[in-house]
Each structure stands twice: as C-alpha cells, then as structure tokens.
Image (cartoon, rainbow, N blue to C red):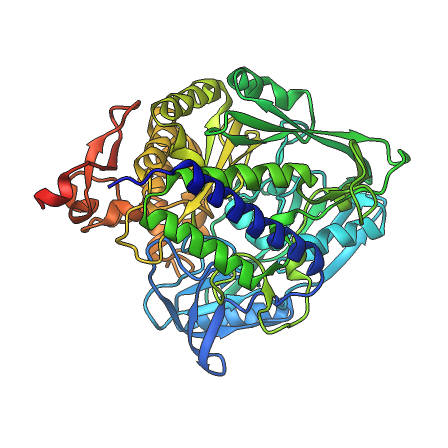
Length: 599
C-alpha cells in the first residue's frame, strides 16, 4: 500500500523537518570544535593480534568481516621495510590500511585470517620542503589536511584535491581521488606527484624487501602504474608533489532551474576553474559552483567549513535517521521530498558552510586563500566528548548509513545521461527525493590521466549518495530508479566507477575499460610475483580471478549483483526483477502492486 500525505500531514511533516534541521544546523554551528573523532578502523583482541579491519562507515558493501592475524604500525621507512621483509619471508598476505579507512570498497581487506595489516597511521611526517622547486615530500600516511597546512607554511598550494581532508596521501593515490577541474593537469592528486618511494616484496638477495624510487622521467611505466595502484604493488612510503605558489579563490553558489542543465554541464567546466554542481533532479534545480582563481593579494579571508563535514549532535542524527527509516517503512515519498527541499534550501541559504572571515557569511563572492577554501572536515579535529557529537557517518552512533554510487561519465555523453535521468524523473517526480535528502548529486570534473588506472577521458563524475537499510534484505523506496541510473551510466555510457566507492556490481568487467590495464598488470607481476599484496577483492576487480558480483537471494537489493530473476530482489515484499523504464536493457528491482497478496 502506498501512503500519501494529506495537507495536514504534509504541513506536520514540513514542520517536523524544519524543526529538526534547524536544531541540527544550530548544533553543527555550536559543536564545530568539540566532537568525538573517529576510532581506529583496526581493532584487535589482544595487543596487535587477532584483528579486524573495517571502513569509516562500519560496513563493507557485502557486509563481510575482514580479519587478519595481526597489524603493524611502522613509524619510519626502515621499520616499514623490516615489516614487509618479515612477511615476505614467511609468505604472508599483506594489505595497507590508513588512519580513517575511508574507502567503501574492500581495499583494506586481506585474505583469510592469517594475513598482516600494515597501517600508515604513524607514517605521517613531512620529509622535506623545497620552496624554490615548489615541491613537498611527505610520508604516505600524511592526511590531506596536513599536506595543505604544510604547503601553506612556505607559501605553496596543492591546486586540486578532494573536498574531504581526512584522506591520506597514500589512500588518495591508491584510489585515484580527485577534486573538480578540467584545467591544468586536471583534478586528480596523483597527477601532481613527481616521485614515489614504494616498498615491495623482494628476493633473498634483496633481503625480502625492495625499495624503489619512481619518477616519470626515469621509470615512466612503473611510475604510471604506481600513481593509482589499489595497494597491489606494495606500500607507498613517501610521495613528492609539485605544488604551486599560493593563490586565492573567489567563490559563489548560484541556484538555477535545470531546464538547460545538459548543455551547461558540458561547457561550464571550461568557464570556471573549480566548477562543480549539486543537482536536485526531483526539484528541477541545480546549484552551480562559480569558483575561480584570483591573485593572492585580492582582499578576503574566506573559509569553507562544509556543513555536513562538521561535528554533528548525535541525538539529532539519530532522529533524522529514525525519520528516514520510518519514511522507508511506510513508503512516505512525500515526507522525503519535504525533507529534501528543506535540507537543500537551508544548506544553500547558509552557503554550505562558507564564511567571509571564518566566522560569518556576509555575502558573495567569498574570497579566501586556497588552503582555506579547497577542503574541510572539522569533525576530525576534535576532542573526545563521549560521542555526544561525532562525524555524521560514525558507525558507533545511529547516524548516516548509505550507499554511494560514484561514476565518471565521458563528457561527450553527459548531456544524454542527464536527459535519461530527467526522463526517469518525469515518470515519477518523487523518485529521487531520497538522493536530495543526502544533499543531491555532486558532480565534479575530471580529465584523462597518464596513470594506468586513472581516468581515460574528460568526464563528469556523478556522486550519488542514498539510504542503506540496516537489514540487507530490506528493499528501498524507488530503488529501481537509482539502480537504473547506475546501469545506464555503467553500460550505456561506459562510465568508470571510483575505485574507493560503489557497490560490487560496478566492478564486474571494469578492468576492460582501461586501455593500459595490461601494462599495469605487467608491473604488478614484476613487483609482487607471488601476489602477497593482492586479495580476493583486488583479483576480482583487476580481472585476474573471479567476479565482484555475489549472486544469491536478495543480492540486487544491495548492489551485490544485477538481478536476473525475482529471487535476487525481494519477491515476498513485492519487489520483482523487471526491465528499466527508460533503459530497457537494465534489470532492476521494481515494486509490483498487488504482488504481496499473491505470494
């Protein structure tokens, strides 16, 4: 049975969401600097032995538990070499894990229970700064926040980077993390790397560990393999980045209707260096980020402290999550749409956390130095407060729990892809309100990269975040619409999935989309012939052995598979495997009215 809202219910719903979100925003402002930081993703039963590793969200796409016999925390390259050598000599499987473990996919997992986790948590030092050459060398466990701050100390700036500063340098290179730009070398951090020191398994003559120094000028093949490595070549020890003189940015957000968005999306990135979009398709609106480089002596001391990345009051997060669970249970699409409208309008009205002086927002444009405008994540910079506040997705509280589908669609296909999504919205306008509850579709520009597993062409990256049930067998409201969008991007437009995000189905056969995959695998075989740094997951996504999809009853509900029969959905709850509405080749879990009584 579908529930609809009467005017009185709708008014109550709107009042509820306004009240909750106002309280939420106030708490976000008040608790900006007091919050419980995330816990270590590695937990061990005794000391550093009998361990498990998870991601910052507390669950991998297949909800499996990843185990290892022990974890090592090297503090220097010499200690790292010793750790790798001992494990290589013993023939042990190894994987690298980072301080916050932000990859949704199972890149941190090793096979079985006897493996070794190598954490870069304490490989977090600056090695050297060369202001004249404009280079900065850091250990791989240095966070993006540290990198930005260290560069700023000597008047330098990283030109492009992800918006969340809790990523490590090694993690960004492992997954190909990026910001948004079509300018220069593009927005991927790895394309500003000039040297990589990497520790890999070695022979007896090497002492069972080998340190290689890779540069584009001397070892181009190995260098381009290591720039986006998925952690299968060894442990990156140090990275040298080419920086730029500090500059300022002038930023304004403008909200428009999306009637001409298909055309704008293709051309807007060449008009503004740091352009991006937040698309609200059910509302028919787009927020344009007009963001340009200006001279360093331009007046302004602006700061971006993105609201969703600030400390959040745990009690407010629990109420919001409970409300979304209730909306899912009663199929309350109207409630989701009311909430989405209030959230998006409030975020826009508060300039998404921009301030002109670090305290208040007084109007556009906001001008500030690159180190203050490019990335944020203040919920990490906090003291222990007993989880009264936390990052919104902290798995220790009842907070955000979501899927994230992040796909790079070739720029030549973007207009058609946007048109397909609009066609789905025309069929049911409320179908994508759930995306807008999670701030809308973030769209960032990327360019082709010489990295063998980097982007193949100029593209627009669609970052779609949406509700995930605690019960993996619980279907979602309008999940067929999101599944169809996912499959349209992957199969109709040959989109590339982000290596550190997405659900399993996005990775089946993905390696065939990379022209330089054979060259990457050749380097991999040379560096680690026994596959000690490989895992079942990396073998699957690299096309070496097996498939990423897991086929079983209910598998399509969480993106573990694409449904091919009703049992892959939730037939007992009325969800059957059906063709797509716009892309007929898609196979999605669709709610069929009346089917529950039949079953």
